[in-house]
Image 1 (tube, rainbow, N blue to C red):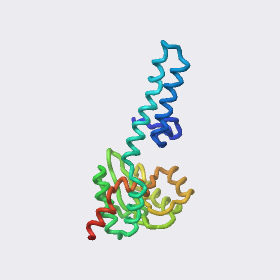
Image 2 (spheres, rainbow, N blue to C red):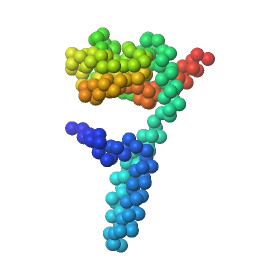
Image 3 (tube, rainbow, N blue to C red):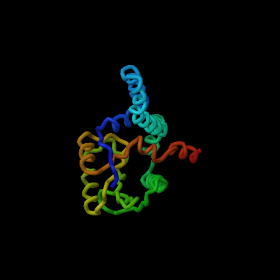
Image 4 (cartoon, rainbow, N blue to C red):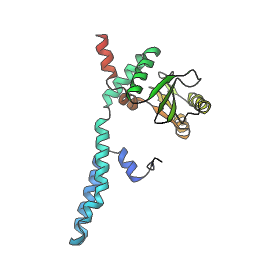
Length: 198
């Protein structure tokens, strides 16, 4: 059984925050413990601060590896220029590099079946260029997931996703793959295609 951290726990919030916040909390604990605890117990300050130092290291590593805003924008702009066959080719190659087994599907509401580690997902990406996504395509993906017995769904979009659609996705095991996730999945997409064209 895989343990999952509660989304709104202190450590989960700190993992999503800047790394230096966890460092500041760890340093604050050490300083307060040094000032308030008797000499024999001051050693507990660094031990109490250790989880925050670990969270700072993990958050820092994730933020270091995360794509920059410029790279996210470049990836999104490149994706907007792609034709459907080229998008399929690029997305399939990126997903395979990421460890997924990828197969096209003809199910309405989904375009690819993905499997990894015994779990099956359906991915919908045909409407990736739509400026604003509402709930309807996500309902179609959910129906495809139900028909296919897929564990999760992934919806690819480079446009805006409405709040209602986000809420529907969160309640129905659907992940939204947008700018940051696409840039992380396909690093250098814009640069690669620019070099091919020159």
